[in-house]
Length: 94
Image 1 (cartoon, rainbow, N blue to C red):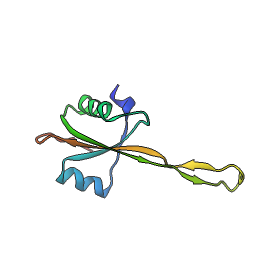
Image 2: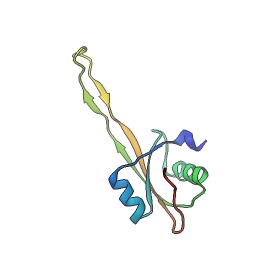
Image 3: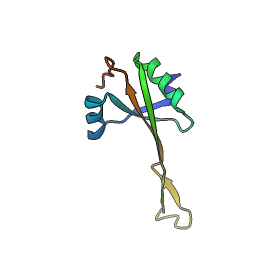
Image 4: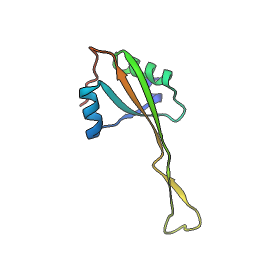
């Protein structure tokens, strides 16, 4: 059930800094997920307590194909969630 909501863990320099300083972890989530379902999924998957969730919707970019110039497509749209954990909890990332 939690893996229907959580797609993958996002690892960047910024997310590493946030996880070490503010106890915040970033996930790519399903398009239809809301704050409550994301918090419940993280608590169930990693056995931690969530204090807050922020959601960011990244709109897809419109790109044209060289082969199909008249039919533009979209690339890169996703929904990210920044999950803040309570003090004393952390997620081990390999």
